[in-house]
Length: 590
Image 1 (cartoon, rainbow, N blue to C red):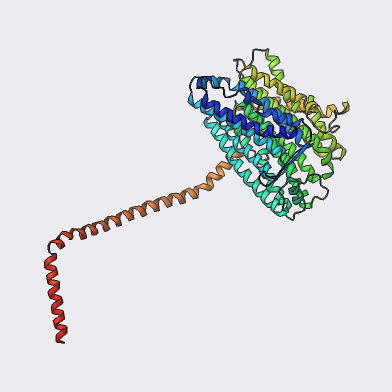
Image 2: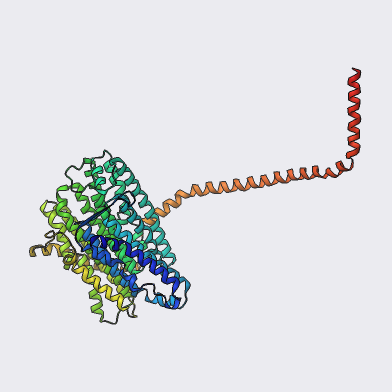
Protein backbone atom coordinates (compact mmCIF):
# COMPACT_ATOMS: atom_id res chain seq x y z
CA UNK A 1 0.00 0.00 0.00
CA UNK A 2 2.78 2.44 0.94
CA UNK A 3 4.65 1.63 -2.27
CA UNK A 4 1.53 2.40 -4.30
CA UNK A 5 1.12 5.69 -2.44
CA UNK A 6 4.77 6.54 -3.10
CA UNK A 7 4.41 5.84 -6.82
CA UNK A 8 1.21 7.89 -6.92
CA UNK A 9 2.79 10.81 -5.04
CA UNK A 10 5.66 11.00 -7.52
CA UNK A 11 3.81 10.14 -10.72
CA UNK A 12 0.58 12.05 -10.16
CA UNK A 13 2.14 15.51 -10.78
CA UNK A 14 3.48 14.15 -14.09
CA UNK A 15 0.00 12.89 -14.97
CA UNK A 16 -1.35 16.36 -14.17
CA UNK A 17 1.29 17.94 -16.43
CA UNK A 18 0.47 15.55 -19.27
CA UNK A 19 -3.28 16.13 -18.95
CA UNK A 20 -2.86 19.92 -18.79
CA UNK A 21 -0.69 19.89 -21.91
CA UNK A 22 -3.06 17.57 -23.77
CA UNK A 23 -6.16 19.57 -22.89
CA UNK A 24 -4.41 22.84 -23.82
CA UNK A 25 -3.96 21.63 -27.40
CA UNK A 26 -7.20 19.72 -27.62
CA UNK A 27 -9.77 22.13 -26.20
CA UNK A 28 -10.65 25.43 -27.91
CA UNK A 29 -9.35 28.53 -26.10
CA UNK A 30 -12.88 29.59 -25.15
CA UNK A 31 -13.33 26.37 -23.12
CA UNK A 32 -9.79 25.93 -21.81
CA UNK A 33 -9.48 25.41 -18.04
CA UNK A 34 -5.88 25.75 -16.90
CA UNK A 35 -6.68 24.91 -13.27
CA UNK A 36 -8.97 21.91 -13.52
CA UNK A 37 -9.98 19.65 -10.65
CA UNK A 38 -7.23 17.26 -11.71
CA UNK A 39 -4.68 20.09 -11.51
CA UNK A 40 -5.84 20.92 -7.98
CA UNK A 41 -5.21 17.33 -6.88
CA UNK A 42 -1.48 17.28 -7.71
CA UNK A 43 -0.41 17.40 -4.03
CA UNK A 44 -3.11 15.13 -2.58
CA UNK A 45 -1.30 11.76 -2.99
CA UNK A 46 1.77 13.22 -1.26
CA UNK A 47 -0.42 14.33 1.65
CA UNK A 48 -1.90 10.84 1.95
CA UNK A 49 1.60 9.36 1.84
CA UNK A 50 2.67 11.49 4.82
CA UNK A 51 -0.08 9.94 6.93
CA UNK A 52 0.49 6.37 5.74
CA UNK A 53 3.12 5.65 8.40
CA UNK A 54 6.87 5.14 8.32
CA UNK A 55 8.39 3.22 5.43
CA UNK A 56 11.63 2.73 3.53
CA UNK A 57 12.33 1.89 -0.10
CA UNK A 58 15.49 0.82 -1.94
CA UNK A 59 15.50 1.06 -5.74
CA UNK A 60 18.73 -0.25 -7.27
CA UNK A 61 17.60 0.59 -10.79
CA UNK A 62 17.10 4.28 -9.95
CA UNK A 63 20.11 6.34 -11.14
CA UNK A 64 22.99 5.48 -8.77
CA UNK A 65 20.65 3.56 -6.47
CA UNK A 66 17.65 5.13 -4.79
CA UNK A 67 17.16 5.28 -1.03
CA UNK A 68 13.83 6.82 -0.06
CA UNK A 69 12.22 6.88 3.39
CA UNK A 70 9.39 8.23 5.47
CA UNK A 71 10.60 8.65 9.03
CA UNK A 72 10.00 10.84 12.05
CA UNK A 73 11.52 13.82 10.22
CA UNK A 74 10.31 13.41 6.64
CA UNK A 75 6.70 12.53 7.51
CA UNK A 76 5.78 15.83 9.21
CA UNK A 77 7.85 17.74 6.65
CA UNK A 78 5.96 16.11 3.79
CA UNK A 79 2.64 16.69 5.58
CA UNK A 80 2.92 20.46 5.94
CA UNK A 81 4.55 20.84 2.52
CA UNK A 82 1.86 18.88 0.67
CA UNK A 83 -0.94 20.56 2.62
CA UNK A 84 0.34 24.03 1.76
CA UNK A 85 0.79 23.14 -1.91
CA UNK A 86 -2.75 21.74 -2.02
CA UNK A 87 -4.33 24.76 -0.34
CA UNK A 88 -2.31 27.20 -2.45
CA UNK A 89 -3.47 25.42 -5.63
CA UNK A 90 -7.12 25.99 -4.69
CA UNK A 91 -6.31 29.62 -3.88
CA UNK A 92 -4.57 29.92 -7.27
CA UNK A 93 -7.70 28.75 -9.08
CA UNK A 94 -9.63 31.66 -7.59
CA UNK A 95 -6.73 34.10 -7.85
CA UNK A 96 -6.30 33.51 -11.59
CA UNK A 97 -10.02 33.40 -12.42
CA UNK A 98 -9.91 36.85 -14.05
CA UNK A 99 -6.82 35.93 -16.06
CA UNK A 100 -8.42 32.70 -17.20
CA UNK A 101 -11.49 34.60 -18.39
CA UNK A 102 -9.18 36.92 -20.32
CA UNK A 103 -7.39 33.93 -21.87
CA UNK A 104 -10.71 32.37 -22.88
CA UNK A 105 -11.50 35.56 -24.79
CA UNK A 106 -8.46 34.95 -26.97
CA UNK A 107 -5.60 36.87 -25.34
CA UNK A 108 -2.64 34.81 -26.50
CA UNK A 109 -0.09 36.33 -24.10
CA UNK A 110 -2.31 35.45 -21.13
CA UNK A 111 -2.85 31.95 -22.54
CA UNK A 112 0.90 31.42 -22.81
CA UNK A 113 1.60 32.66 -19.27
CA UNK A 114 -1.18 30.61 -17.68
CA UNK A 115 -0.13 27.45 -19.54
CA UNK A 116 3.48 27.93 -18.42
CA UNK A 117 2.38 28.31 -14.80
CA UNK A 118 -0.05 25.39 -14.98
CA UNK A 119 2.69 23.10 -16.33
CA UNK A 120 5.58 24.13 -14.06
CA UNK A 121 3.58 24.36 -10.81
CA UNK A 122 3.18 20.53 -10.55
CA UNK A 123 6.80 20.07 -11.64
CA UNK A 124 7.99 22.34 -8.82
CA UNK A 125 5.79 20.39 -6.41
CA UNK A 126 7.30 17.11 -7.65
CA UNK A 127 10.82 18.33 -6.93
CA UNK A 128 9.77 19.48 -3.46
CA UNK A 129 8.22 16.07 -2.63
CA UNK A 130 11.18 14.10 -3.99
CA UNK A 131 13.80 15.97 -1.95
CA UNK A 132 11.83 15.40 1.26
CA UNK A 133 11.65 11.61 0.95
CA UNK A 134 15.10 11.16 -0.64
CA UNK A 135 17.85 9.58 1.45
CA UNK A 136 20.41 9.27 -1.35
CA UNK A 137 22.42 12.18 -2.70
CA UNK A 138 21.38 11.86 -6.36
CA UNK A 139 17.64 11.81 -5.63
CA UNK A 140 17.93 14.68 -3.17
CA UNK A 141 19.85 16.85 -5.60
CA UNK A 142 17.53 15.99 -8.49
CA UNK A 143 14.50 17.03 -6.44
CA UNK A 144 16.17 20.19 -5.18
CA UNK A 145 17.32 21.31 -8.64
CA UNK A 146 13.99 20.43 -10.24
CA UNK A 147 12.12 22.48 -7.64
CA UNK A 148 14.56 25.39 -7.94
CA UNK A 149 14.52 25.89 -11.68
CA UNK A 150 10.86 25.04 -12.32
CA UNK A 151 9.89 27.70 -9.76
CA UNK A 152 11.23 30.40 -12.09
CA UNK A 153 7.82 30.38 -13.78
CA UNK A 154 6.14 31.15 -10.45
CA UNK A 155 8.16 34.34 -10.03
CA UNK A 156 8.20 35.68 -13.60
CA UNK A 157 4.51 34.98 -14.27
CA UNK A 158 3.22 38.54 -14.73
CA UNK A 159 6.02 39.42 -17.16
CA UNK A 160 6.40 43.01 -15.92
CA UNK A 161 9.78 44.73 -15.65
CA UNK A 162 9.72 44.22 -11.88
CA UNK A 163 8.79 40.55 -12.30
CA UNK A 164 11.68 40.00 -14.70
CA UNK A 165 14.06 41.67 -12.24
CA UNK A 166 12.81 39.51 -9.37
CA UNK A 167 13.03 36.38 -11.53
CA UNK A 168 16.55 37.32 -12.67
CA UNK A 169 17.67 37.81 -9.07
CA UNK A 170 16.09 34.49 -8.11
CA UNK A 171 17.70 32.62 -11.01
CA UNK A 172 21.15 34.14 -10.55
CA UNK A 173 21.23 33.26 -6.85
CA UNK A 174 19.77 29.82 -7.65
CA UNK A 175 22.60 29.07 -10.07
CA UNK A 176 25.16 30.15 -7.46
CA UNK A 177 23.46 27.97 -4.85
CA UNK A 178 23.25 24.94 -7.10
CA UNK A 179 26.93 25.24 -7.92
CA UNK A 180 27.87 25.36 -4.25
CA UNK A 181 25.62 22.40 -3.45
CA UNK A 182 26.94 20.14 -6.19
CA UNK A 183 30.50 21.14 -5.33
CA UNK A 184 29.93 20.29 -1.68
CA UNK A 185 28.21 17.01 -2.55
CA UNK A 186 31.00 15.88 -4.88
CA UNK A 187 33.71 16.81 -2.39
CA UNK A 188 32.09 15.27 0.69
CA UNK A 189 30.70 12.17 -1.08
CA UNK A 190 34.01 11.53 -2.83
CA UNK A 191 35.92 11.86 0.44
CA UNK A 192 33.54 9.50 2.26
CA UNK A 193 32.96 7.19 -0.76
CA UNK A 194 29.20 7.22 -0.19
CA UNK A 195 26.00 7.80 -2.15
CA UNK A 196 23.65 8.35 0.80
CA UNK A 197 22.92 11.37 2.97
CA UNK A 198 23.63 9.32 6.08
CA UNK A 199 27.07 8.44 4.75
CA UNK A 200 27.60 12.08 3.82
CA UNK A 201 26.90 13.22 7.39
CA UNK A 202 29.29 10.61 8.77
CA UNK A 203 31.94 11.61 6.23
CA UNK A 204 31.72 15.32 7.08
CA UNK A 205 31.97 14.44 10.79
CA UNK A 206 35.34 12.69 10.45
CA UNK A 207 36.84 14.47 7.42
CA UNK A 208 39.82 16.71 8.02
CA UNK A 209 38.20 19.42 5.86
CA UNK A 210 34.69 18.65 7.13
CA UNK A 211 34.03 22.25 8.19
CA UNK A 212 34.75 23.50 4.67
CA UNK A 213 32.51 20.85 3.15
CA UNK A 214 29.77 21.87 5.57
CA UNK A 215 30.33 25.53 4.68
CA UNK A 216 29.91 24.87 0.95
CA UNK A 217 26.69 22.93 1.48
CA UNK A 218 25.32 25.40 4.01
CA UNK A 219 25.88 28.34 1.71
CA UNK A 220 24.32 26.44 -1.20
CA UNK A 221 21.21 25.56 0.76
CA UNK A 222 21.35 28.99 2.37
CA UNK A 223 20.35 30.62 -0.91
CA UNK A 224 16.98 28.92 -0.65
CA UNK A 225 16.78 29.40 3.13
CA UNK A 226 17.42 33.14 2.85
CA UNK A 227 20.66 33.17 4.83
CA UNK A 228 21.98 36.70 5.31
CA UNK A 229 23.93 37.94 2.30
CA UNK A 230 22.24 35.43 -0.02
CA UNK A 231 18.69 36.48 0.87
CA UNK A 232 18.35 39.31 -1.65
CA UNK A 233 16.10 37.43 -4.08
CA UNK A 234 13.30 37.11 -1.53
CA UNK A 235 12.24 40.78 -1.22
CA UNK A 236 12.61 41.21 -4.99
CA UNK A 237 10.68 38.08 -5.99
CA UNK A 238 7.78 38.09 -3.52
CA UNK A 239 6.23 41.48 -4.34
CA UNK A 240 6.00 40.54 -8.04
CA UNK A 241 5.02 36.87 -7.73
CA UNK A 242 1.32 35.93 -7.60
CA UNK A 243 0.03 35.48 -4.04
CA UNK A 244 -0.33 31.66 -4.23
CA UNK A 245 3.19 31.41 -5.67
CA UNK A 246 4.54 33.56 -2.82
CA UNK A 247 2.74 31.28 -0.38
CA UNK A 248 4.58 28.16 -1.54
CA UNK A 249 7.87 29.99 -2.14
CA UNK A 250 8.00 31.36 1.39
CA UNK A 251 6.09 28.59 3.10
CA UNK A 252 7.34 25.35 1.55
CA UNK A 253 10.28 25.94 -0.79
CA UNK A 254 12.31 28.12 1.57
CA UNK A 255 12.15 25.22 4.05
CA UNK A 256 13.95 23.00 1.55
CA UNK A 257 17.13 24.84 2.46
CA UNK A 258 16.47 24.17 6.14
CA UNK A 259 15.86 20.48 5.42
CA UNK A 260 19.08 20.43 3.39
CA UNK A 261 21.04 21.61 6.45
CA UNK A 262 19.42 18.99 8.66
CA UNK A 263 20.12 16.29 6.06
CA UNK A 264 23.83 16.97 5.50
CA UNK A 265 25.17 18.32 8.81
CA UNK A 266 26.20 15.92 11.62
CA UNK A 267 23.81 17.56 14.07
CA UNK A 268 23.67 16.21 17.61
CA UNK A 269 26.77 14.05 17.31
CA UNK A 270 28.97 14.22 20.42
CA UNK A 271 32.11 13.70 18.29
CA UNK A 272 31.74 17.02 16.46
CA UNK A 273 35.21 18.43 15.79
CA UNK A 274 36.41 21.81 17.01
CA UNK A 275 36.32 23.23 13.48
CA UNK A 276 32.71 22.10 12.98
CA UNK A 277 31.76 23.59 16.34
CA UNK A 278 33.40 26.87 15.30
CA UNK A 279 31.49 26.76 12.03
CA UNK A 280 28.33 26.21 14.10
CA UNK A 281 29.08 29.39 16.04
CA UNK A 282 29.47 31.33 12.79
CA UNK A 283 26.18 29.88 11.58
CA UNK A 284 24.53 30.84 14.87
CA UNK A 285 25.71 34.45 14.59
CA UNK A 286 24.64 34.63 10.93
CA UNK A 287 21.18 33.40 11.87
CA UNK A 288 20.78 35.98 14.62
CA UNK A 289 22.09 38.73 12.32
CA UNK A 290 19.42 37.79 9.77
CA UNK A 291 16.72 37.65 12.45
CA UNK A 292 17.42 41.18 13.67
CA UNK A 293 18.72 42.80 10.48
CA UNK A 294 15.78 41.70 8.31
CA UNK A 295 13.30 42.92 10.91
CA UNK A 296 14.98 46.32 11.15
CA UNK A 297 15.11 46.79 7.38
CA UNK A 298 11.74 45.22 6.62
CA UNK A 299 9.63 47.62 8.70
CA UNK A 300 10.58 50.43 6.30
CA UNK A 301 9.12 48.69 3.24
CA UNK A 302 5.94 49.97 1.62
CA UNK A 303 4.80 46.85 -0.27
CA UNK A 304 3.11 44.40 2.15
CA UNK A 305 4.63 41.38 0.39
CA UNK A 306 8.09 42.91 0.68
CA UNK A 307 7.50 43.31 4.43
CA UNK A 308 6.41 39.66 4.62
CA UNK A 309 9.50 38.62 2.64
CA UNK A 310 11.73 40.26 5.24
CA UNK A 311 9.66 38.55 7.91
CA UNK A 312 10.50 35.21 6.27
CA UNK A 313 14.20 36.10 6.26
CA UNK A 314 13.97 37.00 9.96
CA UNK A 315 12.12 33.81 10.88
CA UNK A 316 14.53 31.68 8.86
CA UNK A 317 17.34 33.42 10.73
CA UNK A 318 15.87 32.10 13.97
CA UNK A 319 15.66 28.61 12.52
CA UNK A 320 19.25 28.91 11.28
CA UNK A 321 20.43 29.65 14.81
CA UNK A 322 18.49 26.65 16.13
CA UNK A 323 20.07 24.35 13.52
CA UNK A 324 23.48 25.71 14.48
CA UNK A 325 22.87 24.57 18.06
CA UNK A 326 23.12 21.01 16.75
CA UNK A 327 26.82 21.70 16.13
CA UNK A 328 27.51 24.12 18.98
CA UNK A 329 25.70 22.11 21.68
CA UNK A 330 25.06 18.58 20.30
CA UNK A 331 23.40 17.39 23.51
CA UNK A 332 20.44 19.74 22.98
CA UNK A 333 19.64 18.56 19.43
CA UNK A 334 17.66 15.36 20.26
CA UNK A 335 15.30 17.50 22.34
CA UNK A 336 15.29 20.48 19.99
CA UNK A 337 14.57 19.04 16.54
CA UNK A 338 10.85 18.18 17.06
CA UNK A 339 10.22 21.76 18.18
CA UNK A 340 12.15 23.05 15.15
CA UNK A 341 10.01 20.92 12.80
CA UNK A 342 6.85 22.29 14.42
CA UNK A 343 8.29 25.80 14.15
CA UNK A 344 8.94 25.24 10.43
CA UNK A 345 5.48 23.74 9.83
CA UNK A 346 3.67 26.51 11.66
CA UNK A 347 5.70 29.17 9.85
CA UNK A 348 4.90 27.51 6.51
CA UNK A 349 1.14 27.62 7.02
CA UNK A 350 1.08 30.99 8.79
CA UNK A 351 3.24 32.68 6.19
CA UNK A 352 1.30 30.98 3.41
CA UNK A 353 -1.97 32.35 4.78
CA UNK A 354 -0.41 35.83 5.22
CA UNK A 355 0.65 35.89 1.58
CA UNK A 356 -2.75 34.63 0.48
CA UNK A 357 -4.22 37.38 2.68
CA UNK A 358 -2.54 40.03 0.51
CA UNK A 359 -4.79 38.94 -2.36
CA UNK A 360 -7.81 39.10 -0.04
CA UNK A 361 -7.06 42.72 0.93
CA UNK A 362 -6.62 43.56 -2.77
CA UNK A 363 -10.09 42.14 -3.51
CA UNK A 364 -11.98 42.50 -0.26
CA UNK A 365 -14.92 40.12 0.16
CA UNK A 366 -18.25 41.65 1.08
CA UNK A 367 -17.80 40.97 4.78
CA UNK A 368 -17.59 43.39 7.70
CA UNK A 369 -14.15 45.00 7.68
CA UNK A 370 -13.42 44.21 11.37
CA UNK A 371 -13.99 40.52 10.63
CA UNK A 372 -11.73 40.58 7.54
CA UNK A 373 -8.93 42.34 9.37
CA UNK A 374 -9.22 40.10 12.41
CA UNK A 375 -8.83 37.08 10.13
CA UNK A 376 -5.90 38.72 8.31
CA UNK A 377 -4.20 39.37 11.66
CA UNK A 378 -4.68 35.91 13.19
CA UNK A 379 -1.77 34.10 11.45
CA UNK A 380 0.53 37.05 12.14
CA UNK A 381 -0.35 37.07 15.84
CA UNK A 382 0.26 33.33 15.97
CA UNK A 383 3.55 33.73 14.09
CA UNK A 384 4.72 36.13 16.79
CA UNK A 385 3.91 33.42 19.38
CA UNK A 386 0.96 35.08 21.09
CA UNK A 387 -1.79 32.54 20.29
CA UNK A 388 -2.45 29.03 19.03
CA UNK A 389 0.24 26.95 17.40
CA UNK A 390 2.66 29.86 17.49
CA UNK A 391 2.75 29.76 21.27
CA UNK A 392 3.25 25.98 21.30
CA UNK A 393 5.98 26.10 18.65
CA UNK A 394 7.86 28.80 20.54
CA UNK A 395 7.72 26.71 23.69
CA UNK A 396 8.79 23.65 21.67
CA UNK A 397 12.17 25.27 20.99
CA UNK A 398 12.51 27.24 24.21
CA UNK A 399 11.88 24.31 26.55
CA UNK A 400 14.95 22.26 25.42
CA UNK A 401 17.07 25.41 25.54
CA UNK A 402 15.90 26.06 29.09
CA UNK A 403 16.61 22.47 30.04
CA UNK A 404 20.16 22.67 28.68
CA UNK A 405 20.75 26.14 30.17
CA UNK A 406 20.99 28.23 27.00
CA UNK A 407 19.09 31.18 28.47
CA UNK A 408 21.06 33.79 26.51
CA UNK A 409 19.86 32.36 23.18
CA UNK A 410 16.28 32.31 24.49
CA UNK A 411 16.49 36.03 25.26
CA UNK A 412 17.84 36.79 21.81
CA UNK A 413 15.10 34.73 20.14
CA UNK A 414 12.48 36.50 22.24
CA UNK A 415 13.71 39.89 21.04
CA UNK A 416 13.78 38.57 17.49
CA UNK A 417 10.10 37.68 17.97
CA UNK A 418 9.53 41.38 18.74
CA UNK A 419 10.78 42.04 15.22
CA UNK A 420 8.33 39.46 13.86
CA UNK A 421 5.44 41.19 15.61
CA UNK A 422 6.55 44.57 14.26
CA UNK A 423 6.84 43.20 10.72
CA UNK A 424 3.40 41.58 10.63
CA UNK A 425 1.92 44.77 12.09
CA UNK A 426 3.52 46.86 9.35
CA UNK A 427 2.39 44.37 6.71
CA UNK A 428 -1.22 44.66 7.89
CA UNK A 429 -0.98 48.44 7.93
CA UNK A 430 0.35 48.46 4.37
CA UNK A 431 -2.48 46.15 3.33
CA UNK A 432 -4.97 48.55 4.89
CA UNK A 433 -3.44 51.44 2.97
CA UNK A 434 -3.58 49.52 -0.32
CA UNK A 435 -6.91 47.75 0.17
CA UNK A 436 -9.37 47.52 -2.71
CA UNK A 437 -12.94 46.36 -2.97
CA UNK A 438 -14.20 44.04 -5.64
CA UNK A 439 -15.04 40.75 -3.99
CA UNK A 440 -12.74 37.75 -3.73
CA UNK A 441 -13.43 34.51 -5.51
CA UNK A 442 -15.01 31.82 -3.31
CA UNK A 443 -12.12 29.42 -3.84
CA UNK A 444 -9.70 32.24 -3.13
CA UNK A 445 -11.02 33.12 0.33
CA UNK A 446 -12.00 29.51 1.09
CA UNK A 447 -8.40 28.29 0.70
CA UNK A 448 -7.21 31.26 2.74
CA UNK A 449 -9.50 30.33 5.63
CA UNK A 450 -8.32 26.71 5.52
CA UNK A 451 -4.70 27.89 5.65
CA UNK A 452 -5.45 30.07 8.69
CA UNK A 453 -7.11 27.18 10.51
CA UNK A 454 -4.23 24.84 9.64
CA UNK A 455 -1.71 27.43 10.90
CA UNK A 456 -3.49 27.93 14.21
CA UNK A 457 -3.97 24.18 14.80
CA UNK A 458 -0.64 22.88 13.45
CA UNK A 459 0.28 20.64 16.45
CA UNK A 460 -3.03 18.79 16.18
CA UNK A 461 -2.59 17.54 12.62
CA UNK A 462 1.20 17.39 12.19
CA UNK A 463 2.44 13.75 12.52
CA UNK A 464 5.26 14.41 15.00
CA UNK A 465 6.57 11.68 17.33
CA UNK A 466 4.22 11.11 20.27
CA UNK A 467 5.12 13.16 23.34
CA UNK A 468 7.66 15.33 21.55
CA UNK A 469 5.55 18.50 21.84
CA UNK A 470 3.60 19.75 24.83
CA UNK A 471 1.60 22.81 25.82
CA UNK A 472 3.59 25.48 27.66
CA UNK A 473 2.84 25.72 31.41
CA UNK A 474 0.58 28.63 32.29
CA UNK A 475 3.39 30.37 34.18
CA UNK A 476 5.41 30.54 30.93
CA UNK A 477 2.67 32.16 28.86
CA UNK A 478 3.69 35.72 29.65
CA UNK A 479 7.30 34.98 28.71
CA UNK A 480 6.11 33.73 25.31
CA UNK A 481 3.43 36.36 24.63
CA UNK A 482 5.21 39.59 25.64
CA UNK A 483 7.12 40.06 22.32
CA UNK A 484 3.85 40.58 20.44
CA UNK A 485 2.54 43.71 22.22
CA UNK A 486 6.07 45.12 22.39
CA UNK A 487 6.51 44.58 18.66
CA UNK A 488 3.18 46.26 17.88
CA UNK A 489 4.23 49.19 20.08
CA UNK A 490 7.57 49.47 18.28
CA UNK A 491 5.77 49.41 14.92
CA UNK A 492 3.45 52.23 16.06
CA UNK A 493 6.40 54.30 17.33
CA UNK A 494 8.27 53.68 14.10
CA UNK A 495 5.27 54.88 12.10
CA UNK A 496 5.12 58.09 14.12
CA UNK A 497 8.85 58.71 13.79
CA UNK A 498 8.91 58.09 10.03
CA UNK A 499 5.88 60.24 9.16
CA UNK A 500 8.14 63.20 8.26
CA UNK A 501 9.68 61.03 5.51
CA UNK A 502 6.36 61.37 3.61
CA UNK A 503 6.21 57.87 2.24
CA UNK A 504 9.88 57.44 1.38
CA UNK A 505 11.20 53.95 2.03
CA UNK A 506 14.33 51.87 1.69
CA UNK A 507 14.58 49.89 -1.58
CA UNK A 508 13.52 46.26 -1.45
CA UNK A 509 16.42 43.94 -2.09
CA UNK A 510 18.91 45.88 0.11
CA UNK A 511 22.27 44.25 -0.70
CA UNK A 512 21.16 43.38 -4.24
CA UNK A 513 21.75 46.98 -5.29
CA UNK A 514 25.17 46.97 -3.62
CA UNK A 515 26.04 43.72 -5.43
CA UNK A 516 24.76 45.17 -8.71
CA UNK A 517 26.90 48.29 -8.25
CA UNK A 518 29.99 46.26 -7.36
CA UNK A 519 29.57 43.94 -10.33
CA UNK A 520 28.85 46.91 -12.55
CA UNK A 521 32.11 48.55 -11.40
CA UNK A 522 34.00 45.28 -11.86
CA UNK A 523 32.65 44.99 -15.40
CA UNK A 524 33.88 48.47 -16.42
CA UNK A 525 37.45 47.32 -17.31
CA UNK A 526 36.00 44.25 -19.01
CA UNK A 527 33.72 46.49 -21.08
CA UNK A 528 36.66 48.77 -21.91
CA UNK A 529 38.74 45.76 -22.97
CA UNK A 530 35.84 44.52 -25.04
CA UNK A 531 35.52 47.95 -26.66
CA UNK A 532 39.27 47.92 -27.43
CA UNK A 533 38.95 44.42 -28.91
CA UNK A 534 36.02 45.59 -31.03
CA UNK A 535 38.03 48.54 -32.32
CA UNK A 536 41.03 46.27 -33.01
CA UNK A 537 38.75 43.88 -34.86
CA UNK A 538 37.27 46.72 -36.92
CA UNK A 539 40.79 47.99 -37.78
CA UNK A 540 41.91 44.45 -38.70
CA UNK A 541 38.88 43.96 -40.91
CA UNK A 542 39.48 47.31 -42.63
CA UNK A 543 43.17 46.48 -43.20
CA UNK A 544 42.30 43.04 -44.53
CA UNK A 545 39.74 44.55 -46.92
CA UNK A 546 42.30 47.08 -48.19
CA UNK A 547 44.90 44.33 -48.74
CA UNK A 548 42.30 42.24 -50.50
CA UNK A 549 41.42 45.13 -52.81
CA UNK A 550 45.12 45.60 -53.70
CA UNK A 551 45.60 41.91 -54.41
CA UNK A 552 42.44 41.78 -56.49
CA UNK A 553 43.68 44.79 -58.49
CA UNK A 554 46.99 43.07 -59.21
CA UNK A 555 45.18 39.88 -60.12
CA UNK A 556 42.88 41.79 -62.47
CA UNK A 557 45.88 43.34 -64.20
CA UNK A 558 47.49 39.92 -64.60
CA UNK A 559 44.32 38.48 -66.03
CA UNK A 560 44.10 41.35 -68.55
CA UNK A 561 47.29 40.02 -70.23
CA UNK A 562 45.58 36.71 -71.02
CA UNK A 563 44.01 37.92 -74.27
CA UNK A 564 47.37 39.38 -75.45
CA UNK A 565 49.07 36.06 -74.76
CA UNK A 566 46.39 34.15 -76.68
CA UNK A 567 46.74 36.51 -79.66
CA UNK A 568 50.57 36.24 -79.88
CA UNK A 569 50.92 32.61 -78.71
CA UNK A 570 52.05 31.24 -82.14
CA UNK A 571 54.69 33.93 -82.64
CA UNK A 572 56.00 33.47 -79.14
CA UNK A 573 56.24 29.70 -79.68
CA UNK A 574 58.22 30.22 -82.88
CA UNK A 575 60.53 32.68 -81.12
CA UNK A 576 61.04 30.16 -78.33
CA UNK A 577 61.88 27.43 -80.91
CA UNK A 578 64.44 29.68 -82.60
CA UNK A 579 66.07 30.50 -79.26
CA UNK A 580 66.26 26.83 -78.34
CA UNK A 581 67.78 25.94 -81.71
CA UNK A 582 70.39 28.72 -81.34
CA UNK A 583 71.28 27.43 -77.90
CA UNK A 584 71.73 23.90 -79.14
CA UNK A 585 73.96 25.05 -82.02
CA UNK A 586 76.09 27.13 -79.64
CA UNK A 587 76.45 24.17 -77.31
CA UNK A 588 77.43 21.95 -80.27
CA UNK A 589 80.17 24.32 -81.37
CA UNK A 590 81.66 24.31 -77.89
